[in-house]
Amino acid sequence: MVESQDIHYSTRDYQRSPVPYIFKTTAFVTTALTIAGGAWYVAVNLTTASDLTAIYNCSAFFAYAFSIPLLNDKFRFDKVFSVAVAIAGVLVVAYGGKDEKRTPDGTVGKGKEEAQNRLLGNIVIGIGSVLYGLYEVLYKRFACPPEGTSPGRSMIFANTFGSLIGCFTLFVLWFPLPILHYLGIEEFRWPTGKAAWMLLISVIANATFSGSFLVLISLTSPVLSSVAALLTIFLVAIVDWMLTGDTLSSASIIGGILIIVAFFLLSWSTYREMNEERKKKLENDEAETDNEDDSEER
Image 1 (cartoon, helix red, strand yellow):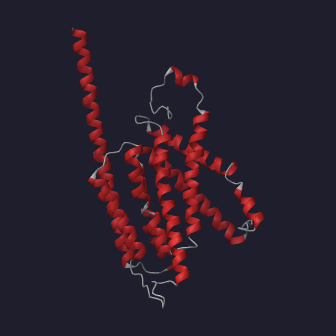
Image 2 (spheres, rainbow, N blue to C red; image 1 turned 90 degrees about the vertical axis):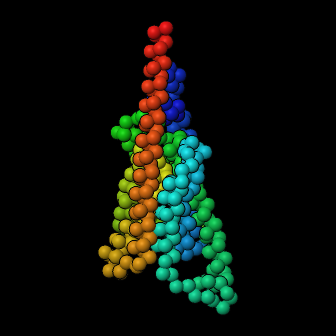
Image 3 (tube, helix red, strand yellow; image 1 turned 45 degrees about the vertical axis):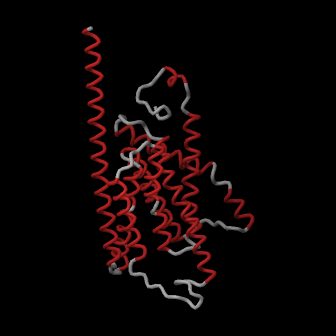
Protein backbone atom coordinates (compact mmCIF):
# COMPACT_ATOMS: atom_id res chain seq x y z
CA MET A 1 0.00 0.00 0.00
CA VAL A 2 2.80 2.43 0.90
CA GLU A 3 4.94 1.44 -2.08
CA SER A 4 2.11 1.69 -4.62
CA GLN A 5 0.49 4.69 -2.84
CA ASP A 6 -2.89 3.05 -3.41
CA ILE A 7 -5.31 1.94 -0.71
CA HIS A 8 -6.62 -0.83 -2.99
CA TYR A 9 -4.44 -3.93 -3.16
CA SER A 10 -3.76 -5.65 -6.46
CA THR A 11 -2.88 -9.31 -6.98
CA ARG A 12 0.71 -8.28 -7.64
CA ASP A 13 0.85 -6.40 -4.33
CA TYR A 14 -0.28 -9.48 -2.43
CA GLN A 15 2.40 -11.64 -4.05
CA ARG A 16 5.29 -9.21 -3.49
CA SER A 17 7.10 -8.97 -0.15
CA PRO A 18 7.13 -5.46 1.38
CA VAL A 19 10.41 -6.10 3.26
CA PRO A 20 12.89 -5.00 0.52
CA TYR A 21 11.01 -1.73 -0.08
CA ILE A 22 10.73 -0.95 3.63
CA PHE A 23 14.43 -1.70 4.16
CA LYS A 24 15.56 0.51 1.25
CA THR A 25 13.24 3.33 2.27
CA THR A 26 14.37 3.16 5.88
CA ALA A 27 18.01 3.21 4.76
CA PHE A 28 17.95 6.35 2.63
CA VAL A 29 15.47 8.29 4.80
CA THR A 30 17.50 7.53 7.94
CA THR A 31 20.76 8.41 6.19
CA ALA A 32 19.37 11.81 5.17
CA LEU A 33 18.15 12.41 8.74
CA THR A 34 21.47 11.32 10.27
CA ILE A 35 23.55 13.58 8.04
CA ALA A 36 21.21 16.51 8.75
CA GLY A 37 21.37 15.90 12.50
CA GLY A 38 25.13 15.34 12.40
CA ALA A 39 25.57 18.66 10.61
CA TRP A 40 24.01 20.40 13.62
CA TYR A 41 26.49 18.83 16.04
CA VAL A 42 29.44 19.65 13.77
CA ALA A 43 28.33 23.25 13.25
CA VAL A 44 27.57 23.93 16.91
CA ASN A 45 31.31 24.19 17.63
CA LEU A 46 32.01 26.36 14.58
CA THR A 47 29.32 29.02 14.45
CA THR A 48 27.20 31.09 16.81
CA ALA A 49 24.01 29.89 18.48
CA SER A 50 22.05 32.60 16.64
CA ASP A 51 23.29 31.52 13.22
CA LEU A 52 22.72 27.88 14.14
CA THR A 53 19.10 28.50 15.15
CA ALA A 54 18.27 30.78 12.24
CA ILE A 55 19.80 28.70 9.44
CA TYR A 56 18.75 25.26 10.67
CA ASN A 57 15.14 26.29 11.10
CA CYS A 58 15.01 27.46 7.49
CA SER A 59 14.33 23.77 6.80
CA ALA A 60 10.64 24.78 6.70
CA PHE A 61 11.35 26.68 3.48
CA PHE A 62 13.28 23.77 1.97
CA ALA A 63 10.50 21.37 2.95
CA TYR A 64 8.07 23.45 0.91
CA ALA A 65 10.55 23.75 -1.97
CA PHE A 66 10.98 19.96 -2.15
CA SER A 67 7.23 19.36 -1.71
CA ILE A 68 6.47 21.00 -5.06
CA PRO A 69 8.42 18.53 -7.28
CA LEU A 70 8.25 15.43 -5.05
CA LEU A 71 4.71 15.67 -3.66
CA ASN A 72 3.19 17.64 -6.55
CA ASP A 73 2.14 20.42 -4.19
CA LYS A 74 0.86 23.57 -5.84
CA PHE A 75 2.68 26.85 -5.41
CA ARG A 76 0.41 28.88 -3.14
CA PHE A 77 1.15 32.43 -2.06
CA ASP A 78 -0.52 31.99 1.33
CA LYS A 79 1.78 29.06 2.13
CA VAL A 80 4.88 30.94 1.02
CA PHE A 81 3.81 33.94 3.10
CA SER A 82 3.19 31.76 6.18
CA VAL A 83 6.61 30.11 5.90
CA ALA A 84 8.24 33.53 5.40
CA VAL A 85 6.54 34.88 8.56
CA ALA A 86 7.72 31.83 10.52
CA ILE A 87 11.32 32.25 9.35
CA ALA A 88 11.11 35.97 10.15
CA GLY A 89 10.04 35.02 13.67
CA VAL A 90 13.05 32.72 14.00
CA LEU A 91 15.38 35.49 12.81
CA VAL A 92 13.91 37.92 15.35
CA VAL A 93 14.43 35.42 18.18
CA ALA A 94 17.94 34.54 17.00
CA TYR A 95 19.27 38.03 16.31
CA GLY A 96 16.98 40.39 18.20
CA GLY A 97 18.70 42.44 20.85
CA LYS A 98 22.11 41.12 19.86
CA ASP A 99 24.96 43.46 20.80
CA GLU A 100 27.77 42.91 18.34
CA LYS A 101 31.03 44.79 18.57
CA ARG A 102 33.62 45.30 15.90
CA THR A 103 37.06 43.86 16.52
CA PRO A 104 40.28 45.55 15.35
CA ASP A 105 40.44 43.46 12.17
CA GLY A 106 37.01 44.72 11.09
CA THR A 107 34.97 41.56 11.61
CA VAL A 108 31.75 41.72 13.60
CA GLY A 109 31.76 40.03 16.97
CA LYS A 110 34.61 37.60 16.25
CA GLY A 111 38.25 37.63 15.26
CA LYS A 112 39.48 36.68 11.80
CA GLU A 113 40.06 32.99 12.56
CA GLU A 114 36.75 32.68 14.42
CA ALA A 115 34.93 34.41 11.56
CA GLN A 116 36.35 31.88 9.11
CA ASN A 117 35.15 29.04 11.35
CA ARG A 118 31.77 30.74 11.55
CA LEU A 119 31.50 30.76 7.75
CA LEU A 120 32.38 27.06 7.61
CA GLY A 121 29.86 26.34 10.36
CA ASN A 122 27.15 28.26 8.51
CA ILE A 123 27.85 26.27 5.34
CA VAL A 124 27.67 22.98 7.26
CA ILE A 125 24.42 23.89 9.02
CA GLY A 126 23.01 25.18 5.72
CA ILE A 127 23.58 21.75 4.18
CA GLY A 128 21.97 20.20 7.24
CA SER A 129 18.95 22.48 6.88
CA VAL A 130 18.47 21.46 3.24
CA LEU A 131 18.80 17.76 4.08
CA TYR A 132 16.35 18.02 6.98
CA GLY A 133 13.75 19.58 4.71
CA LEU A 134 14.46 16.81 2.18
CA TYR A 135 14.12 14.16 4.89
CA GLU A 136 10.63 15.37 5.80
CA VAL A 137 9.48 15.28 2.18
CA LEU A 138 11.11 11.89 1.48
CA TYR A 139 9.32 10.44 4.49
CA LYS A 140 5.98 11.82 3.30
CA ARG A 141 6.56 10.62 -0.28
CA PHE A 142 7.98 7.15 0.27
CA ALA A 143 7.10 6.07 3.82
CA CYS A 144 3.57 7.33 4.49
CA PRO A 145 0.31 5.56 3.67
CA PRO A 146 -1.65 7.07 0.76
CA GLU A 147 -4.49 9.55 1.02
CA GLY A 148 -7.68 7.89 2.22
CA THR A 149 -5.97 5.74 4.86
CA SER A 150 -7.61 5.97 8.27
CA PRO A 151 -5.86 8.24 10.81
CA GLY A 152 -5.42 5.33 13.20
CA ARG A 153 -3.54 3.21 10.68
CA SER A 154 -1.43 6.20 9.63
CA MET A 155 -0.44 6.85 13.25
CA ILE A 156 0.49 3.21 13.84
CA PHE A 157 2.57 3.05 10.67
CA ALA A 158 4.31 6.35 11.51
CA ASN A 159 5.42 4.98 14.88
CA THR A 160 6.45 1.71 13.24
CA PHE A 161 8.62 3.55 10.74
CA GLY A 162 10.06 5.68 13.53
CA SER A 163 11.05 2.46 15.31
CA LEU A 164 12.67 1.21 12.09
CA ILE A 165 14.70 4.43 11.90
CA GLY A 166 15.96 3.75 15.42
CA CYS A 167 16.78 0.12 14.60
CA PHE A 168 18.69 1.09 11.45
CA THR A 169 20.66 3.68 13.42
CA LEU A 170 21.44 1.15 16.18
CA PHE A 171 22.48 -1.76 13.97
CA VAL A 172 24.05 0.00 10.96
CA LEU A 173 25.08 3.60 11.63
CA TRP A 174 27.07 2.85 14.79
CA PHE A 175 30.18 1.55 12.99
CA PRO A 176 32.00 4.94 12.63
CA LEU A 177 31.97 5.42 16.43
CA PRO A 178 34.68 2.88 17.40
CA ILE A 179 36.80 4.01 14.43
CA LEU A 180 36.65 7.65 15.57
CA HIS A 181 37.39 6.56 19.14
CA TYR A 182 40.35 4.38 18.14
CA LEU A 183 41.90 7.10 15.95
CA GLY A 184 41.49 9.66 18.73
CA ILE A 185 39.37 11.97 16.59
CA GLU A 186 36.46 11.78 19.02
CA GLU A 187 36.62 9.83 22.28
CA PHE A 188 33.43 8.26 23.62
CA ARG A 189 32.70 7.46 27.25
CA TRP A 190 29.62 6.18 29.03
CA PRO A 191 27.86 9.09 30.76
CA THR A 192 27.62 8.95 34.52
CA GLY A 193 25.89 10.84 37.30
CA LYS A 194 23.83 13.89 36.43
CA ALA A 195 24.92 13.80 32.77
CA ALA A 196 23.46 10.30 32.41
CA TRP A 197 20.12 11.40 33.85
CA MET A 198 20.01 14.47 31.62
CA LEU A 199 20.75 12.31 28.58
CA LEU A 200 18.02 9.85 29.58
CA ILE A 201 15.48 12.67 29.88
CA SER A 202 16.69 14.08 26.56
CA VAL A 203 16.31 10.70 24.83
CA ILE A 204 12.77 10.22 26.16
CA ALA A 205 11.76 13.76 25.18
CA ASN A 206 13.31 13.42 21.73
CA ALA A 207 11.63 10.04 21.16
CA THR A 208 8.27 11.57 22.06
CA PHE A 209 8.88 14.55 19.78
CA SER A 210 10.11 12.42 16.87
CA GLY A 211 7.17 10.02 17.09
CA SER A 212 4.67 12.88 17.25
CA PHE A 213 6.47 14.68 14.42
CA LEU A 214 6.26 11.66 12.10
CA VAL A 215 2.57 11.24 12.93
CA LEU A 216 1.93 14.91 12.16
CA ILE A 217 3.71 14.67 8.79
CA SER A 218 1.72 11.54 7.96
CA LEU A 219 -1.62 13.17 8.80
CA THR A 220 -0.91 16.64 7.36
CA SER A 221 2.12 17.82 5.38
CA PRO A 222 5.88 18.33 5.84
CA VAL A 223 5.48 22.11 5.61
CA LEU A 224 2.85 22.40 8.35
CA SER A 225 4.81 19.97 10.54
CA SER A 226 8.04 21.90 10.05
CA VAL A 227 6.42 25.22 11.00
CA ALA A 228 4.71 23.56 13.97
CA ALA A 229 8.13 22.40 15.17
CA LEU A 230 9.25 26.04 15.21
CA LEU A 231 6.81 26.61 18.08
CA THR A 232 9.34 24.83 20.29
CA ILE A 233 11.65 27.87 19.99
CA PHE A 234 9.15 30.03 21.89
CA LEU A 235 8.36 27.20 24.32
CA VAL A 236 12.08 26.80 25.09
CA ALA A 237 12.27 30.52 25.90
CA ILE A 238 9.29 30.19 28.26
CA VAL A 239 10.73 27.11 30.01
CA ASP A 240 14.09 28.85 30.32
CA TRP A 241 12.34 31.82 31.94
CA MET A 242 10.50 29.52 34.36
CA LEU A 243 13.64 27.58 35.35
CA THR A 244 16.25 30.34 35.44
CA GLY A 245 14.11 33.38 36.23
CA ASP A 246 15.59 35.35 33.34
CA THR A 247 12.95 37.65 31.89
CA LEU A 248 11.83 37.10 28.32
CA SER A 249 13.36 39.60 25.93
CA SER A 250 11.16 41.63 23.62
CA ALA A 251 12.79 39.81 20.68
CA SER A 252 11.74 36.42 22.10
CA ILE A 253 8.16 37.61 22.61
CA ILE A 254 7.82 39.26 19.17
CA GLY A 255 9.51 36.33 17.41
CA GLY A 256 7.32 33.84 19.25
CA ILE A 257 4.17 35.74 18.29
CA LEU A 258 5.28 35.76 14.64
CA ILE A 259 5.86 32.00 14.70
CA ILE A 260 2.45 31.38 16.31
CA VAL A 261 0.72 33.62 13.75
CA ALA A 262 2.55 31.81 10.93
CA PHE A 263 1.41 28.44 12.28
CA PHE A 264 -2.24 29.48 12.37
CA LEU A 265 -2.00 31.05 8.90
CA LEU A 266 -0.50 27.86 7.51
CA SER A 267 -3.09 25.72 9.31
CA TRP A 268 -5.87 27.79 7.72
CA SER A 269 -4.21 27.53 4.31
CA THR A 270 -3.88 23.76 4.66
CA TYR A 271 -7.52 23.47 5.74
CA ARG A 272 -8.66 25.48 2.70
CA GLU A 273 -6.51 23.37 0.38
CA MET A 274 -7.91 20.12 1.81
CA ASN A 275 -11.47 21.43 1.37
CA GLU A 276 -10.76 22.36 -2.25
CA GLU A 277 -9.33 18.91 -2.97
CA ARG A 278 -12.30 17.24 -1.25
CA LYS A 279 -14.76 19.24 -3.36
CA LYS A 280 -12.90 18.38 -6.57
CA LYS A 281 -12.91 14.71 -5.63
CA LEU A 282 -16.66 14.78 -4.96
CA GLU A 283 -17.27 16.51 -8.29
CA ASN A 284 -15.17 13.90 -10.11
CA ASP A 285 -16.99 11.06 -8.36
CA GLU A 286 -20.37 12.57 -9.29
CA ALA A 287 -19.24 13.00 -12.89
CA GLU A 288 -18.11 9.35 -13.05
CA THR A 289 -21.44 8.22 -11.56
CA ASP A 290 -23.38 10.25 -14.13
CA ASN A 291 -21.31 8.75 -16.96
CA GLU A 292 -21.98 5.24 -15.68
CA ASP A 293 -25.74 5.96 -15.47
CA ASP A 294 -25.74 7.31 -19.03
CA SER A 295 -23.93 4.21 -20.26
CA GLU A 296 -26.45 1.91 -18.57
CA GLU A 297 -29.39 3.81 -20.09
CA ARG A 298 -27.92 3.40 -23.57
